[in-house]
Image (cartoon, rainbow, N blue to C red; front, side):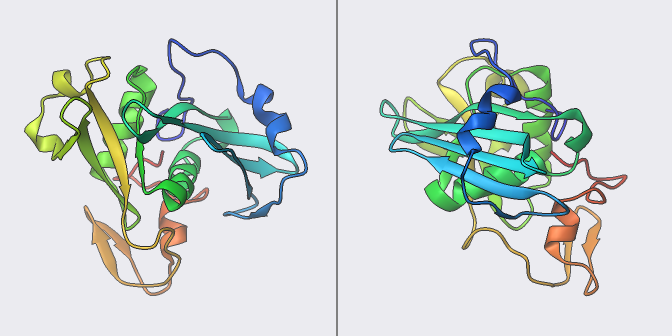
Length: 205
């Protein structure tokens, strides 16, 4: 993803079209702009989707892995017309609302690397990103690692998103994020999601 471009992994196959049926007859709730959110949850799997006129435009699939006891991204994709509008960020936050922590896949496409780098730089009020060592089961500051150590295509060092507070924040408040101002006339939803969410200094996943 280029902050909401397609995130695919070499060891996986499929497309967003194949996920459409998962959300048939699922309850839909307003997300942002004209998009609606729906989800499908199982004991070991979560599918979050954003739909427009009942057509799936963004999907996130997260699976629970017993070996490390955490939820891990398996697949994510956003159609081209909805890229750079915060779709991946929104679905990731919804997954964090359920599970608290989500780790990335060990296989990183160039687009996925760009997405996670942007998420690390502009985490916002909803989550933090740390480095997780699956061998020692410890969390670390990303600044302690080089890019080669983080993006090593192995399963021992992975990025983890951790929920902050009570999840999705929609209230108005004054904040600064790397020179990005949230004023009293804008909500955090306006900043992080939607067609006008990207700025010259911030690229939205």
